[in-house]
Image (cartoon, rainbow, N blue to C red; front, top):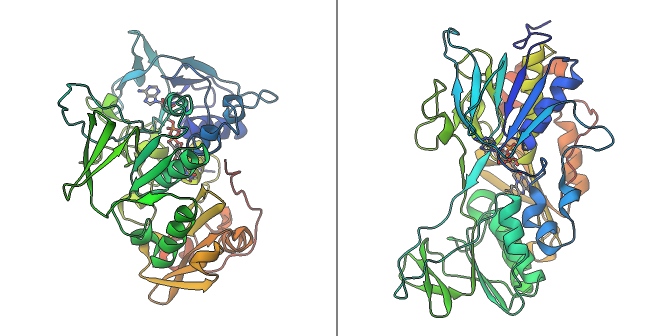
Length: 431
Ligand SMILES: Cc1cc2nc3c(=O)[nH]c(=O)nc-3n(C[C@H](O)[C@H](O)[C@H](O)COP(=O)(O)OP(=O)(O)OC[C@H]3O[C@@H](n4cnc5c(N)ncnc54)[C@H](O)[C@@H]3O)c2cc1C
């Protein structure tokens, strides 16, 4: 039995009341921990799930209550400290400094272990000065407040510009179109949205679905800034061209929320500022772990796993919960993501980002039914399906790593993962 990092009656502090924080607490309780757990969240609302914020929540198809993470029928046995941010962490690698966190209200909370799950914040474009002296205010999409602001803005007949070429930007473009925007223009920075990461066929499929609904794509130049103008807003592209719009949405990436750790002893990656961890989420301070979008695990640093997806945050939380409670180690499964755009359900699994061979196995970009395989050196590494639920689910089941296989050569060398026997699938319910 592995050693528990958290004593049986120890007090666990979780900083960040989001997806990874919630699932860490659930995992720790499921593993039998009976000591107190406190979850700190700077937002005043109960913990919620984010994927619908760029999809069904924006269109009004789901309400805030539908996104709550805690189950009222089976609530977590934890203390929620909401509406007050954590401002610093105490503890050192030698273990000689008292472990705990300081909150913005000036209180110190000692604990026996701390899990950092503070997620990320949305990046936005620089705001250029305008002749009228009015500051442009582009929307971003990271939290419920952001989504609520956009949801409460009537888009009927308005010109919307969406900056960004990732799934978040494309989902925002689709929902704005569905909400009756007069025009939607995406500044994706590439000719075929998503093609650089996922291949030409996938880019064509996405482009074709969006164009069929009237979405326009700006020339493939990098967006540099946004400014207000007499007609609303202008997005300034690198080539000097501009896109004029009533509403601008920036979906150009996110940055780990680790500013509160700058004076702490945990190590942050240079540049991005993510919390550096090993593959159990452990940081350089004994008893301090990190998971989710704020963390960079060893397998992220070595490029073996991508960061920033729902599934990754949930699985990391389970790994951390096992390390804290001394339960059997939990394996990380093949990476997985999904996106909903108009009537496309796009699902990707495996190490697509490492592949250099892309093969269309079935379907065509125009029919919205593509099945694509990704390989490197002739070895299949991943799959992407557009409206191919069954194929992607089957691939994931075949690759599922069971705890007993954790120390097998295949699991230790994930580039050479073979086909594993089928086990129960835990695919997330997509929003
Ligand atoms: C709009 C949107 C759509 C998405 N859609 C998809 C999708 O379709 N598919 C997919 O695979 N993934 C999707 N994702 C990604 C997925 O939701 C994230 O990977 C996941 O939420 C990460 O969980 P987390 O717990 O690390 O961070 P979060 O869920 O962001 O939680 C972090 C929490 O910590 C709080 N916090 C931050 N700093 C402090 C502090 N100092 N003190 C106290 N609290 C603090 C924050 O307020 C937040 O509540 C989407 C993300 C967004 C934003």
